[in-house]
Amino acid sequence: MLYVEKSSYTRYSLILGLCYKFFEAICLPCDTPFIRGDEHAAGVSKKGKTMGIEIIAAVVGVLLGVGGKYAYDKQQAAQGKNKIEKELASAKTKASDIVLKAKDEALEIEKERRKEWKKTEDRLAEREISLDRKLDELDKRAEKLRAHEDDVESLKNEIRSIRTKQQEKLEKIAGLKKQDAAEKLMQMTERDIKDDLMGLVTKLQDDAMQDAEERAQTVLVTAMERMSSEVTAERTVTAIKLTDDEMKGRIIGKEGRNIQALQRATGVDILVDDTPGMIVLSSFDPVRRQVARLTLEMLMKDGRIHPGRIEEVVAKAEKQIDKEIDRAGEDAAREVGVVGIPKELLRLLGELKFRTSYGQNVLLHSTEMAHIAGMIAEEIGADVRTVKIATLLHDIGKAVTHKIEGKHHHIGAELAKKYGLKDDIVHAIEAHHDDIEATTPEALVVRVVDAASAARPGARNISAENFAERMKDLENIAVSFDGIDKAYAISAGREVRVMVRPERIDDLSSIKLARDIANKIESTMQYPGTIKVNVIRETRAIEYAK
Image (cartoon, rainbow, N blue to C red):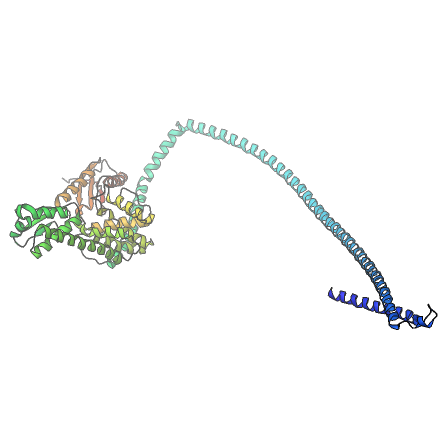
């Protein structure tokens, strides 16, 4: 814009200069005196004349410049208008060309779409014709099938009538009805195959038992060979040996203050009788009993026995037992090789160190089971970790049976579920006794190993009275069935030998009798391991030569 303004100013200056020069050229000759004829007029100052001429020339130049500028602007406007009109016409021409081109393209697209629609319609028409043809064929086949069905039904009716006539003729010839003939045939067949069937059943059972027994023996023997542990039988310490009889008086104290303080601090009954050099601790809680035992040992070693000292020693003994419990649970888990057991369960596991069952230390029993169960699980392809944790914690409920009512395996399962153990572990703990069916291989391993550990010679200490009572119960169960002559419990209650009357019990019935006796023993008795039921049927023919 600035360039255009400068150019216009230059043009205006040139035009004004030219006009001024033109006018000066015209008016300069007028300096000669022509208005007044005298010489006075001619003597008018030349300077005045020149100034007037310049003014007139300037006015005329200005007028001419303005007119030129107007003419120039008008010319430029006309040129710009013409240029715009030309560009507008060109744009309209291009727009019309674009519109025409777009219309042509749209027509081409529409033609292509119509062609595609035509092709699709033709294909649909062909498919419709094909479907109609297939439907006609199917209708024809259906008609043929219906005709064949009618023929088959008529043949069936004819065969039924022929069979009925044949049966009627056979019944007339044989003098028997169909049902009677079938019964006689079954009786004859049963008599013929009875012996063979009995032999086959016995052979199959023997083969299965032999294979299973050999496999089980192999697995168990392998596990036991790899497992070497100390004797797990242990008796609960309920009696404390005193250094001398004077210690009884010191323990009782003046007016019984010391023994009352001991009983109050430990929660254990202390029985002092006439037995020389011995006092007895009585409590349902084995941990309390252990605290009392340790307290008395520390007091007797120290020699200072009075109520204040007793409370101090009891607190010290409780701390020591707590540490021992925690360490025992952690050591057991570390020995077995399992991790991830909650600390609460490890503490309960440690309390089993002071718990015995039939004279068998429960913690040592659990660790022994975990080792054996892990080996068996490896042999049969079960989950080793699940089996080890389940066997290690299978008797965890015994640590709180004096606090919670119920069977220990149910309590143990609830504790395992409470602290977030897997369902397989919970089920194995709950099913290690017979009241719940074991549905997983891991649960079966736990049950088998528990029975094997409990039945091991020397593992448990059962009184002679209980042993004799169990033997008697076994014999009574066996003789409660019909056809039994005699029954004997032998092999320390591991086998029941049953003598049957051969005239009342045959070979097949003896097999069923053995199974019935075993089922009744399982449902009515509690015992470690397994009991073999041996049914013996013997027929003797005796004659005398005279």
